[in-house]
Each structure stands twice: as C-alpha cells, then as structure tokens.
Image (cartoon, rainbow, N blue to C red; front, side, top):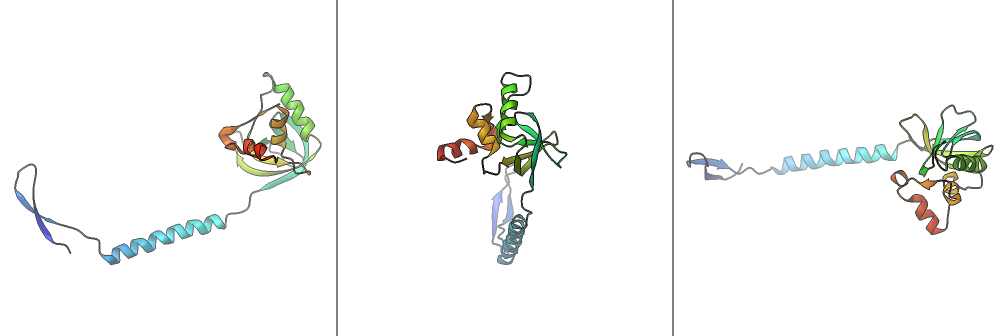
Length: 163
C-alpha cells in the first residue's frame, strides 16, 4: 500500500511506525466518475427547467408606484428592479399617478422573476410596444432603480440607449 517510515511522537519522543497512504488509481477513477455524474445531472436538470411563467392581461388597478393587478390574476404584481416611494410618503402620490399613466387599462406581458415575502409576483412587465414599465417609471423620475435586485440592469440599458 505504501512505504513505511518512522516518526517521533511529540508527547513521548518515541519512534512509531507511520505508513504513507496513497490513493489507488481505482479510487481516484471512481471519485472522478461520481463527480462527473453529479455535475452532469445538475446541468441536465438546469437545462430541463421549465421556462419562466408569463402573466398577460389588462391592468385593472394600480396599488402604488410599483404594484399593480392584471385582469384574471388574483395575485398582485410587483415590478422587478423598481424602487418607488410608498403611498403617503414624499413622492408616493406622483409615483402612483405615473404608473397609472404608464400601465392602467393597458395590456401588459409580465415575466415572473420571483415571489416576494408578501406573496406578490415579482415580474418584469412590458407594454405591447415593447417598453418596460419599470424603465418608463425610472425615466420619468417618479421611481429609482432598485439596484439590490436589478444589479444595475436599467442603468446599463439606459447607457446602451435601449429600454
């Protein structure tokens, strides 16, 4: 298995036999095969994951500057990557009014990103003309980009000249 060597123990100073242990090639090969199987299974599961859910419909109600309802969907939708002032706070009324102008009564196509702690669907929502509702809110100055979640997506998009 390995060659024998002698070492002194720190406590007693006596010599004792020590065997160097080497991994046998068969063990190394088995570990490699198992590792590859685990990684390839994970990649396959990721590749087979279902596509994002898309919620489409006409906006029936705007709750505040970043939350709305779509006809036929009971759950509220929170616009992804958007930080709008809350109702009753400075700028809250303006943000709510702006989202009404942008979305109320219009058809939106919302790609679900997450479900937040309040049970709302967090989604990136687009009008039929392809404009992103959150980007329009940011451009208007009624809301800011929520960098914690967007990772700077809207800033990069604006610098590139797109929506």
